[in-house]
Length: 283
Ligand code: G3P
Ligand code: CA
Image (cartoon, rainbow, N blue to C red; front, side, top):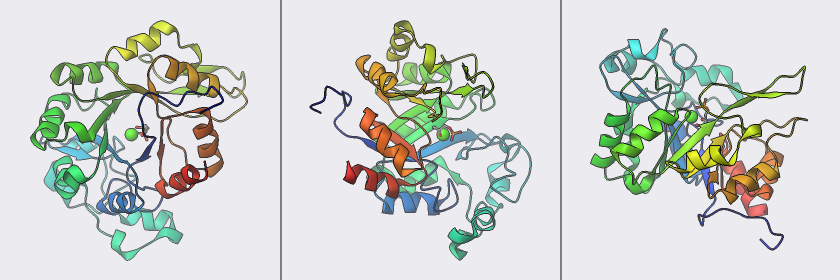
């Protein structure tokens, strides 16, 4: 850019399909991943968890109630039990305008099934979801990535620095992204981190950035667009100046996409990869 704005150390902007193209089809099903591929996203975002019988599955919530016809904790169910569930019909009921018969009775998928389906043709942005609940998922995850020869097709992300550091120790070729989360107190306008383990983007020090740089290639903060303007161009530029990529989540509105692209973010998580590609074309 000729206005002095940095755009990051990697060459390409990443269009990351959040839980697949989950604005168009039920999240984390073959329909949402197929849509993401069709819409030419760069990475399929996968939340990974462990079943009661130690299988890695792609699933976002800790409980299965919202996105299946089952109930209870995902980790209390075996893969066989999860496979009997309908992980698609909820979407048709919630979003009648996007409803399609093909969404009905879609299955919960294992990580291996996703890799079998798309192999090295696609890239995977994998989150170790709730590592304190899904204890011990790091080693089987790294083993699976290695077995499928997908080191170059994978980025692993987590809110947990411990989980990422464990992966870094197991295989330091796999690029890692530290997720961050902050909240805004509407009454005071003050921000605070959503957990005790990662810093609040507003107060991030050089040391915080450098600590993350020890094991990760970038950060993935949530984007809150409000009067606090914690997430602003300065924050983006500060991150890039520390040689870290910055991939905010989850951006679904065209105007927000355009603004963030302008500020220099190096990728975006979105439920609508088609909208993001349009915003990039117009840039
Ligand atoms: O992984 C980035 C973003 O997906 C984190 O939030 O809750 O959608 O997994 P969540
Ligand atoms: Ca995620």
